[in-house]
Length: 213
Image (cartoon, rainbow, N blue to C red; front, side):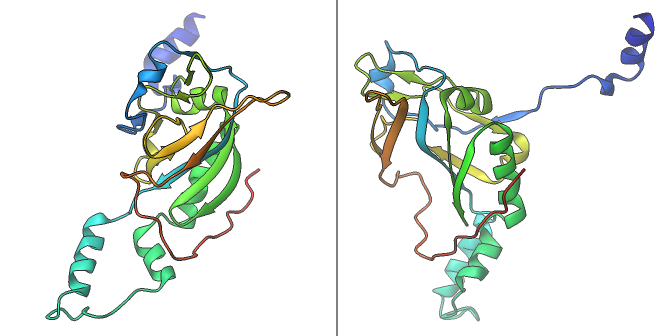
């Protein structure tokens, strides 16, 4: 025992440290009033769908490009980018997206689909609590669900992730419900585009992420 204590004292890096996290600011319901007297959702409650929305990788470069494309005096005036060129320059790379998928699967989530600016997945309330560090509440009448605090993600993923959709059905952006019909145990939501979400990309640039084992 003395030898172990001495080793830890001499080599503190041997002691595992908690992974640093970053909060996704304002990633919760606009008006959580329905949840003020709510109860915690059952741990095994399943979300029908969750979605990570990616950040533009270089917003300043994109703003500059858009200005040049509309400036008659610019050499870039009138030019356009193909969908592949846009994805390559301004969205996370396939390898970066795969890193996010692996993190999700390591936390027990099931991958559904992905595109240049999103990843869709499903999981339980317990998995959301563990991975994103937030409690999920349900209203007394069972109609509403959601988090009342900012979810957190590993700092290493913060450069890529802008928003997590589907954690609540209270925002004006979400038209959803807490569904628990006989024999089922899931929360579901139908999504309208939130105002603070990046505009949907009309290009069909969805790529298949390799299955992660």
